[in-house]
Image (cartoon, rainbow, N blue to C red; front, top):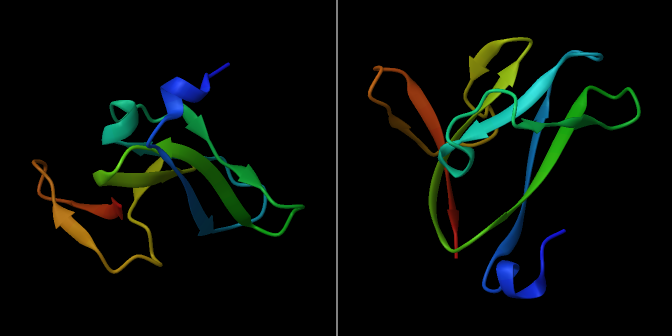
Length: 95
């Protein structure tokens, strides 16, 4: 359990993606060492809308969704950068 001190200055950031109902979806990014299974995303009542919440300190973060094993940029986020592999990463700014 995180303490208030550990979360001091951090903000609640919700990540969401719409995909096929029953998919397996994870959130991976620089905030979890790009671990493709560290942060599972929960589906909202069979709607195909998957969400995950992270507590992040102010800064810039790169991330992707891993949908059924396929790395995918956030289709609802126009902010992205080219990564070292020559593909794209979505970017979120926490202020």
